[in-house]
Image (tube, rainbow, N blue to C red; front, side, top):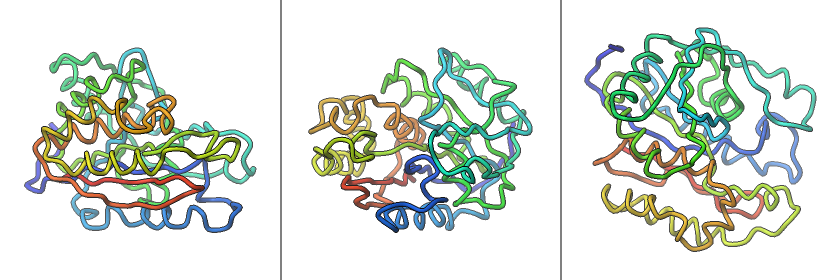
Length: 269
C-alpha cells in the first residue's frame, strides 16, 4: 500500500498548452500568460498534502494501458520545430515503483488490462505543465497511458478504479486540452465551434456526478464536438479525472480564450 492519510485530494483536468509554449517567446505576446499563471497555482491549496502525483497525458497511447515504473524517468521532447533551448528543459522528478505496481494491480483486478513500463519517461504533457506547477520536481510522479480505442467508458472506469488513491495522498491530474484542433490553434484554419462546445462541456461538468458521466460518455454528440476534437485524445484525460471523482462535486477552475479558442480547466472534489 501507498501512504495512508485522512485528506481526500481533489482531481484536476488541466490544459498543457502548445508544445513548450510557456517557455518561449510567442506572437502575439502574452497569449499563454493566463494559462501559465493558472498552472503555477492550481494545486496551491493542497500542495502540503501531496505525497505522489499521477498524470494521465494525452500524448501516450498503448495497446494495453501502462503506467511508468522507471525510478528516474527521462524527458521525452515530443514536440517539433521549437527553439533549441526548449529541448534542454529539465524536470527531474522521481518515479515510484511501489505505487506503479499498486496502480497496475488495481486496474487489472478491476478488469482493465494494465502493465508497468520499465523504461518510459515523461512526455511534454507532463513535464511542461508540471515544470510550472511543481518546479522543485520533488514529488514522485507516475504517468498513465491512454487506451488507443479512446473509449469514454474505459477511461471513466480507469478513473473510478484509481479513485481510492486520492485518500492516500495521491494527486490525480488529467493533462490535455478542452479544445484541440491543432490546425486552428496554429492559424492554418479557422477556429470554429469552441464557444458552443466549451459551454456544453462546462455545463456538463457542473452537473451532478451521474448526469456528468452520462454526458461525457456521449461527448461526441455535443455541439461542435468533432470540430473542437477531430481526434479525442486530448479530451480523454478528462474522462479519467471525472471517473476518479465519481460522486463528487466539480467546478470550473480556469477559462480563457487562447488563439481564438475557448479553453477550460476543471477541479473535482
